[in-house]
Image (cartoon, rainbow, N blue to C red; front, side):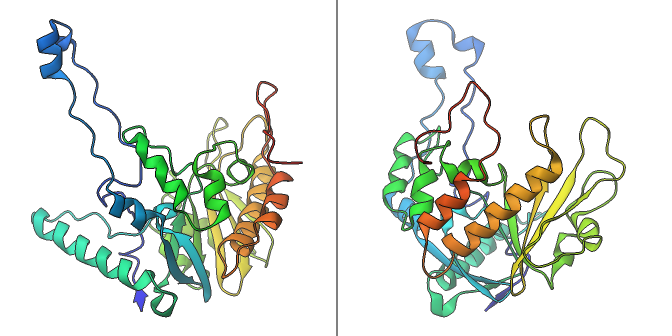
Length: 292
């Protein structure tokens, strides 16, 4: 089954389960007697049910660029329909839920794995949820070592080596799907990709020609295998040049795809690569003891 780009945009609205939810500020008017404080306290945040945790920890089976991938649902930050601007919000919500449910059913089995033009992924401490501390129990249900290694550890080698924000795995025959991703100066990510040589297993970088001297917005891409390509944003910093950051993250993403997302996981090989690629560490921090 082939899913259009309308399915591959954002999982933000699935019961608010993907991203942290900000706690409402306590109003100054509540700083009075105890009874008033109780009345003005923010409502208790929603807790994830056992069924929701089980779903997010389960594996999604997908095909991108002719390459089968296995990714836990909690790592997918781009799987729902695009925002609707119609006046039928209730109908839109119902339609979105139906599409998401259909996707969940097909992605839940390798036999029915949907074909996706591009997939947005985040490697992060999945168990950290300020509004739902017990959500950390998701770490116990994740099937692969790589996801468990970062689930409750922001300093894990893989976490340090991978892009800080999301990255895309895409079909290199469908790169025009990035035409709606604006750089900020009138260019799009698709424009940047069009200017890249895109050689197999090599990272290319194109930066915004009109960027200010303070911030240079760049797009990086690495063809990995068959028609699967990684695409992500690079900013660079005083501690690491843009080209160096892109090269490091390109190697990390490639190792992640080859050793973590395939039919069989090779966590030792992934950790070995990640330990050799961790981003520069300030003198006030430590690397931790996960690397030899």
